[in-house]
Structure formats: structure tokens, C-alpha cells
Image (cartoon, rainbow, N blue to C red; front, side, top):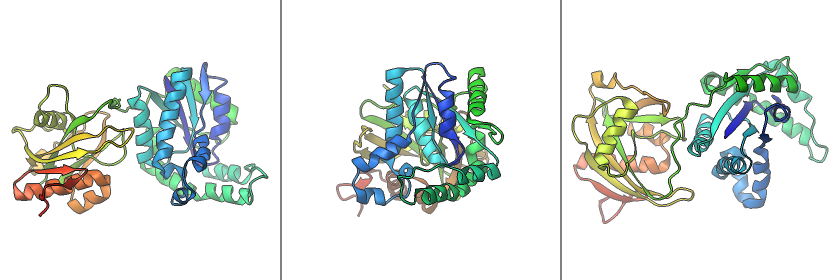
Length: 351
């Protein structure tokens, strides 16, 4: 099962190209995630929708895109052609990682006409007469997203996606170019570790590593949003501390000589579709400058790494992970492990 994801700025011609493409790729089906956005006003209270300017900022939209794509492929098989703008790398990670976890390969293509051509297409875009002020709003929306598009191109998009310059191509010609590239193998599946979706509560072990300034090492996964500590799920029959040591070696190339000391046990409550479970953080000690310089990300699972202060980590980690880190640092200072529930110490330990 495969997804061909057609990315590009608003007005790049993704949907018209996708409609041509499904005629060229055997056993392919069109899935436009715009239908998910159109359904959300029927599912969520107006006040909740009013708090975001873009449907993509809603976790439910991203989750439904993943689940709907997986359900369609389970029903129909073959190839799913998805025309959708994705400009935020963390949303790309969440959606593509979620599909990879379901053993669905994603081939990522970018329609990239010259900006002058793109502006001409936006200006000439047809808008339904049923939308009050629709022409003005939709065109302005497209213009407003040109700057985020430029930023994504400069930061990550061209390195992640197979670029197709459609400046002089019709939608059909663009579709032929894509079909040839996909069929020839010129567009390989995105290199994302296929982390299976849990089917029950899990036990996970993370390890905190520090530099000579006591900053903590964080890593940037390719398959989910937000930064993380080195670590992962404890395998059946494996000791948690040893699992943390194994994950550190696999993810950073650093082999810890001693079993790390426990800092935090945190019970993570189930939050569908997740099952929660126990999350352990260990103290892997301080790396000197020579050891820190040897940090290596050997595989496709991680995009980058950096040492961060506690204050910097607050802006990098999702809130639950940051709370876990915050209390782990306090436990490290006190020399005594803490037990947390959903990131909050219990039995008077916070005193």
C-alpha cells in the first residue's frame, strides 16, 4: 500500500494534477484531505474551531487524515493520491510517521512552479459564486501562505520531497511527469522508521545525557512531532535501564559504560488512540567535549540533536515530556528518584 503525497503552495495545481494522476497510476484512488476540514464544523463546537486559523493546527484533523487514508487503503488497496499542502515540518512528521506506523509507504512530491507563475495562477483561480466574498478571501489566503511556503522551501521541503517544476506544464503533463517518476523508482518512499502502533500499555525508557554546561541532550525524531530524549520502548524480557542504554547506542552512537541511575517513573494516562503506560527517565551522566563531538545519528529515525538548557527545552518538548524532564532534573539535584502520575509528583514528593 502506497500514498503519493502531492505537496505545494496553495494555487500550485495539486488537486487538478491529482485528478489526472489517478488515470495514469493503475488501481489508484484520490483522497483530498479538504473533505476532513469540511466535516469538522459538523463535529466540533464553533468556539473550538474559532480558536484556530487553519484546520491543520487541530490534532483531530491530522489524526483523521492518517486514519482515513489507512482505512481507504485497507478497503481499496493500491495507491492513494493525496493532494495537500504541508508546510510545517512537525505536521509532516506526524502524518507521514503515522502512515509509516501502519506500514504505508509515502512518496512525497512537490509541485514547484516559479513564484511569478504561482501568483498568476492564484489571480486567475476560479471561486464558487456561492461563497460570499469567496474570491477575495480565498485568493488572499493563498497569497498569505506564500511566505510560509518560501520558509519551508529554505528550511526542509526541497530536501524531503521530489521536486517537479510545473512552471510550463499543464496538469496532465505534470501528472505524466509524476507517474513516470513514481513508476521508475525516482521517488523512493520517505525514509521513516516504521514504529508500530501500540496495542496495549507500554513501558518506555529514556536517558538524559548532559554536556559540560549541564545542558541536556535532545533528539528530533522524523516520525513524530516535537523533540524527545534518547530512548524508546522496552522490549519483552528486557531490563528498562538496559533498554535505555541500547537505545542511546542505536540513536546516538554513544555506548554507556555504566548502568544509568533512575530519576523518574511517570505513569502516562491513556489518551486515545494511545494506550499510555510507564515512562522511565534515567541519568546517563555527563559527556565531556570529546564524547559530545562523537554524537552520531546513524539511521533515518532521527533528524537532528542538540544540547538544551531547561528553559530552551520548555519550548522544544511537548508539555508532558517537558514536565517529565523538569522533575527529572529536580530528582537529579536531590539524589532521589521521583514517582509521577501524568507528569505530577504524588505522595508529597514535590515539597
